[in-house]
Image (cartoon, rainbow, N blue to C red):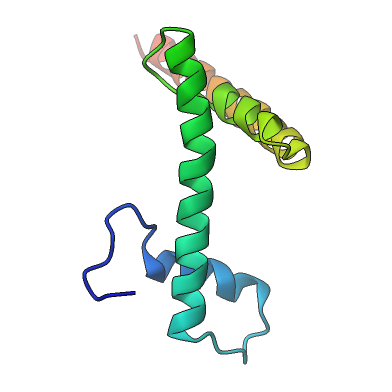
Length: 111
């Protein structure tokens, strides 16, 4: 890969940090390995997002949401990823709702 990195790629430093999390502390990761994962992860994200975006266009919607990404994963034959993503999405939404509710009640108590 050239030095003028494609702007559609995830930052290689972030990729390296994620890779190091799963490896033993003494393990080293070559620049080539990080760049290969960077390209693969970015391509995967583009592939899934493209499928989700096509669904939105078909339904005359402009915004891709988490449900669209889960649908795209399932549509592309990645059911295991889709199910895991759905679980995460529901937990994420639940946490956001709880945070919004608690900040609303705090605002009401302060008035």
